[in-house]
Amino acid sequence: MNLVDSACVPLRRYIHMKDDHISATVQAISYMKAHLDEDITSEQLAVHVSYSPYHFTRIFKSVTGISPRHYLSALRIESGKLELLKAPSLLVKVLMAIGFRSVGTFNTRFKENVGVTPKKFRNLSDALSAYMNQYENQELLLNATDLNSTQKICCHIEAPDSFRGMIFVGLFPRPIPDQRPIAGTAMNRKNRTCTFTNVPEGTYYTLVAGIPWSINPKNYFVLDDSLRGIFPSAIHVTDNTDINMTIRLRSPLPFDPPIVVNLPLLLFEQHKKVK
Image (cartoon, rainbow, N blue to C red):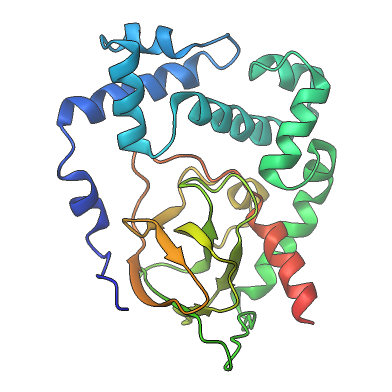
């Protein structure tokens, strides 16, 4: 089964959206970012953008792929990552700044979404950024395809000619990378194609991130400016799935959900498995 090229995803996915729906969603996201330390409800956001709560939630999800509450949670964790990378930064101060009132809740949510505890995230940041940078001039070989598998999910990534960095590709159960992908890999240098096999049966979203090389560790963990890519529809995977898709990396849009999961950590863990 050959799927259509998603090179024009930004155009085709959003062309049917009304400008006022996108505008209302962006306004709501801006409000969330400015009031992370407050208790924000969907009803408040709906009033802020002059919609009924029902219509606002429906519109927001149609634009971002997730609910306002889910998006707000992701923003808080993403802001927590940024605060933790500042030195020195007290955990209690971090919690208050992003709207958490319980250390236990923050630790649990952070580990679920990012992949490690807040303390480990901060302690590993320098080592993981150095680990990433070694592949600027060294070939990364990760993706091992099972040639005997009847299943094949082939992803070809198109990036701007000027892009220099690491490309991450993952199959996620939701249209936001806020947990470990069901299957994932990374590519560097001129590599642009990967193939997944032995993926568990299910419905997934193919999400891609392009992270430029940097000497600033923050740029590998807080990915607001990283290139994005998403296949325009969910894919349904069975044992006999045979899919070819092309996804073009693009600049982030103002309503793209945050890339919450720790991608350098996933790369490190997968490379250890390959070895």
